[in-house]
Image 1 (cartoon, rainbow, N blue to C red):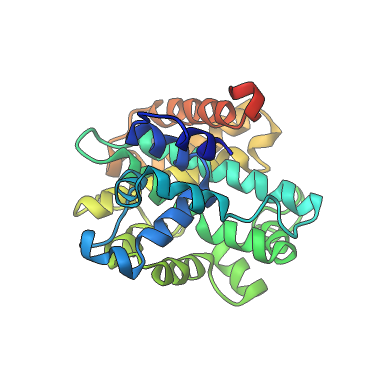
Image 2 (image 1 turned 135 degrees about the horizontal axis):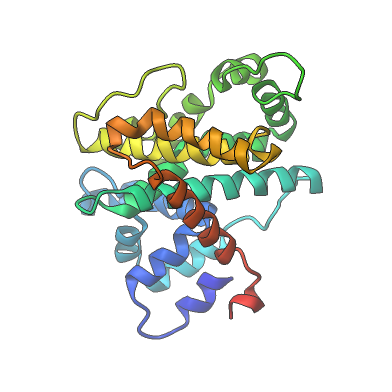
Length: 275
């Protein structure tokens, strides 16, 4: 709705349009899917990896049919499953904002933002298309206190749906037309693997997105919901894990998460409140 209203305004700047679009993961994904289709390939060697570039190629007026073509929320989902998907979307958007905040000045913050969203794509796909299975995976990963030890997400997903969430997301991204550089950067760093210093730009973006996704997940975990001290401890483990590879200061990740939560909650105001 916001996009359709803004498209009608005159002299709208492309960067303002892009900022509005990336607040809606469904619209950002759909725009990137369409712009990476064959008819745009000649204009974007290596693929389009930012919404800003997609808006340039589509033209502002070309955005309206893309926005209007999205399925209405929440589709066929029940109220309970819609609430769960909304929570996952909020977590993904917090991660995206964190990645952009931590992005070095010599890199594109919007790329970091979108890669963090793409690293959450597997979770979002399963939450939408297989909500009951998604809840089973969640319970295996983050069980009730006093229960069995939680499984890794990869193991839980394989046990429930027979495929890792990253593999599902990458298959979809490949179908959408993303190139191998993006596919590499959207693969999350394994929680069981040590974090190594990046070798090149795509590695840095991958680590930024992974750190952001892990931070958002830590803040949404059952442990973090136990209280402020538990949340701080969960986030500190993520910060320590990436501190050397990304040269993170002691409180840099905490401040980025807090800023991201404020930004996401402000952007989620109803249309009449945002007017």
